[in-house]
Picture 1 (cartoon, rainbow, N blue to C red):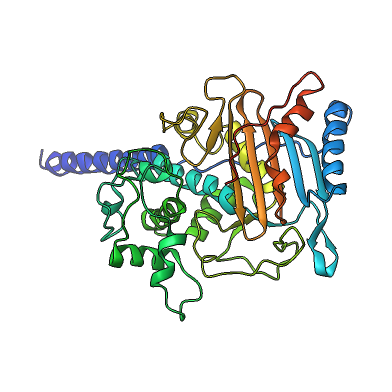
Picture 2: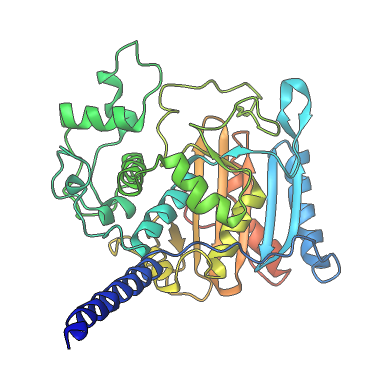
Length: 392
């Protein structure tokens, strides 16, 4: 009897320890999904896609010969690359030609990756989209702005590339995300609109999201992307402006139309809205991981690909993605970019898991003419029509 007096509490204690460990493990499993590397077929099937390859190569060869394109192209259907080619120079003054490994600044296509990073934290249960930014970033003065407002460009905030300049001393040659936030806190530049009123594309939103990723994850933005996104997906040639070596092999330089080098400026240090460097193949891995649901759950992607600004009729914006044909089977989610001599396009047609990636290190507007690419892919019976222009 006396022995039972000690054995029973010991059994209860042991049960509680085991139960607590099982609960903790289940919480970790439910709150954290490690992205899986997508399944891809890199070798181009030149027989199956013979017609598409011919039409695409004809299109880009004509653009290149007309001096209207300098860059890299990758087109894929599902896990299959159907066309991949380089045209022109990576570094013109050294006669360095582009190749499949060439690294480009994504400009505003970086917003896609920042959006994905934010939604990864949402899926991990670490971030709610309705949370006010002021509850995450101390002293943030725009009290009614939420994470959701930032993702969908409905915050009404002013653009840092316009308001920061007047508050920067000559000693600050490179602005950081924290510098930007400090200026917002100190000077409280007037908002353009009340939060949630309507869509207003603004780089400040995604620069703030990069800070939120850092605050929630307790990692730098560059480290979070490397550990939680790039490395798991096999994106081995992807970097931010803060951790890339400018002398790195395969890095390109940005040019004007006349091949004048575009110099760096003080806004290059702000990342999230821009500032990611990568290759066409690494972007293909990201696109494929989304199609295969190895990165974000289908329900989360539906949030990202849903129009969040109903007042915009012909096109719209989700969470990190522009979109067209919202009610059509040919729905397209995409983002374009333009920064310091780089023009970029990353388009995805959901109905047939199509990926279109065009990266240029020269100010070629032809990069945005993806309607021509769709016409080349869909064949002679397809009538490509030029959509509303969305340059960035």
